[in-house]
Image 1 (cartoon, rainbow, N blue to C red):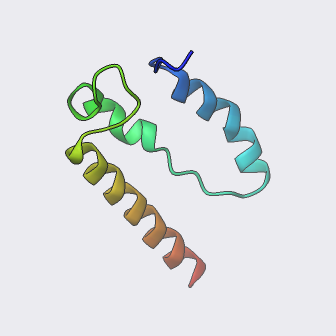
Image 2: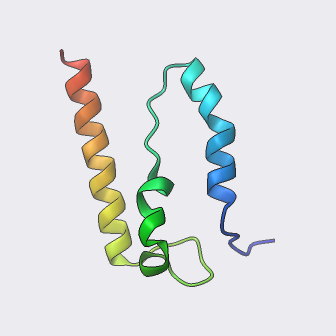
Length: 74
């Protein structure tokens, strides 16, 4: 089905965690970041977000990249 189903992200993220950890890949859990405001920031019956949602996600991505770059530069 092409219909968005709430909760799929959490299931897939949990499945991916062991592999990411095994290979030392940093995890940026955007689902956890947006979940508290999901009803406000996600388009109804869709996996996409409104402008405020993408702004929040972009800031989380930027913070994670800067943190990782800082950790690598030490």
